[in-house]
Length: 376
Ligand SMILES: [Zn+2]
Image: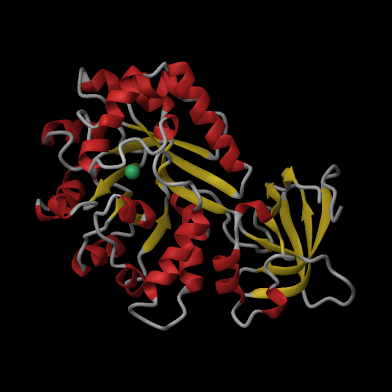
């Protein structure tokens, strides 16, 4: 054992830790007291275990409902599969036993929380009924974004307000202007996330501007076809973009202008989207983003991309953390370095992103509490 958290203060020793400037330091000793990082020392003498300590990842956008029917409809288009209300997914969700759906959803989310995510945001379909019958707020790190049904929308939204952390709107055309005004009014102090310009067709219909004017969302999901002006607008308004690159590839809808998001310094977070079609593994998203960027620039943006998956996710959901820094919550994951070998690397963050997989996670700490310990 490298640490024991049975007592309220303890220390952890690791060979490598990614500290607040998102650089790796060697031979790091971290003191934790009452769930907070009290002291960090690095470049210590002596033998340190071959482990890597980094902040946990935030999966800012998933749909856990489709976890019940993975890889349904290989030949179908995005619209045929997931567009409400006619998409095959929605027909399946209507029919499925809500108890089975709830069990499947919670099992997935719990597994994910044990595999290196500290926060997960879920677009839960099916209105008040969908949220109340088919999920449960079992952790403050599980963010429920509900989707109001259009029948008796005021009553529906008022009921949803008490059980949802915010709303997850399918697109700018799912509701008319009056309905969007009601949605905004009732959820005025809770965040709205919305799929925007996932397809070219919706971008042509100016869905980004319609969403902005009518719903004032906190986060725009996908942004596959946004142009530089729109990307700049997200930055100017201090809102968030949530990119889901593997989902865009799977559904063959295009690929976001990642370099412009970096150049404009937009607050970007990352999501894996539909569990039914995309494995909820954010490490794969990080690798794809880095691979894709090399086509446009040989500059190293790995730090920016990694901040999207950590620091920005914490900030999007108003949690303190996402960095390893004194005075911050002791949230981190510890990874087995033996199959990664950072000591040999000339670019440690890039090496970690390309060689990491969740089976190498040795332990995860949230507020100084160990969630999972892998005994080798
Ligand atoms: Zn989505």
